[in-house]
Length: 159
Image (cartoon, rainbow, N blue to C red; front, side, top):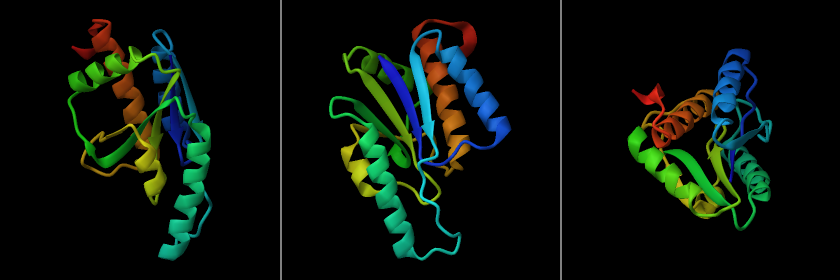
């Protein structure tokens, strides 16, 4: 099985990118994992609500075009289901047993995700009830995925 993180926003900050890449390398010992980023629509910081809505719609089309019908889709959203690291590890373990070709994790951009992506999701998870910038959310997701594999494999990292 392959894991893929889809970050609507670009992972442009060098410090974030270095740490994300480090976790990806570590996860790579246990699973194939890739990141797709930078599919956000460029809009002004003073954009009107209608412009933001249209940008989310266009971003959703890009996200959904990446996700095959037989692939599993997890949306990360502050309103999603919260869980402990152990619970996340159990869910990741169950996902590994589904036989799905790929599990996609989607992190929205600055204006969030269009409802069409959330509707398509097989699961909506929360990393926290707090709102994070997308680069930090991707980093936290990578760390938690690594932690999940460490728990599954009884690796000492989680202790």
